[in-house]
Image (cartoon, rainbow, N blue to C red):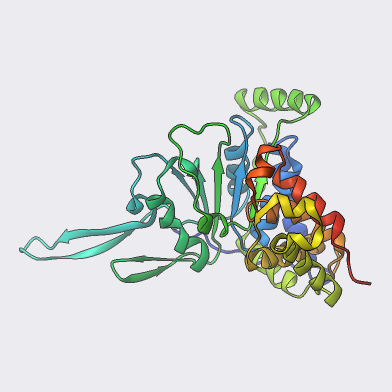
Length: 339
């Protein structure tokens, strides 16, 4: 089921092939998803950080298209799970089936579900009850599935990309906190600009007319992702940067130390997964910028996407129309980088 991995071509300096391949992948997806460069950048960052992403946005904003475009340009198996109220856990993980030997006997054989892919699209994930959503918990964290007491390892390249619609509440089930925390990032997608929407019209017309006659470019090999991850692991963070990241998380847990605003706004702070998410994604940011060290701007650039699903607002904040992003803005404003 897994695609063959191609070795990247050599370059004139270490790290160049992997970075060029990733930037090429990002450029291709941006050409297919016009006006959503920030969303595409977050998908690429999550892929490099070996994490999962929850994309939230109104209908018709190319959430599914962005994920499918990423899969189409990457040497990877793509699986789509349409979450519905009648979905069963075995529809996600797979299950055992009985195979008769034709002589009165037989054996049980495990048949893999759609979760055994490289890029798994969990479309409208909040439309399935908690029993089904929980089927993803082990896969998202341990990268394995346990069925009938047996463990089955997922592919080395594995990523859950989930979508949800924020305005439709009827027939939906809120994601449990344990599952939300397993997403590396929670990304909001918004309307494109008027100029970009004109480009969308032209792109769709071109696709409906048959598109370009030229052959599509070769897919980016999986090995480029693995090579990039090795290089990202070598990105360094100074002690002051590590203290800064932990300080941002600490502000969500002890908001009373940062004034009345945060004290009134925050009910529950971020878990240690928040610190890990900041560390992993900030190193990705630095690598994409061609640096081998992290700067505060790298942390600030991804703080909202890493923390917005890990902070629970108080009733007073919700009643006053305060958004989680407002809280994160205030935390970034107050928490300083050590000299």
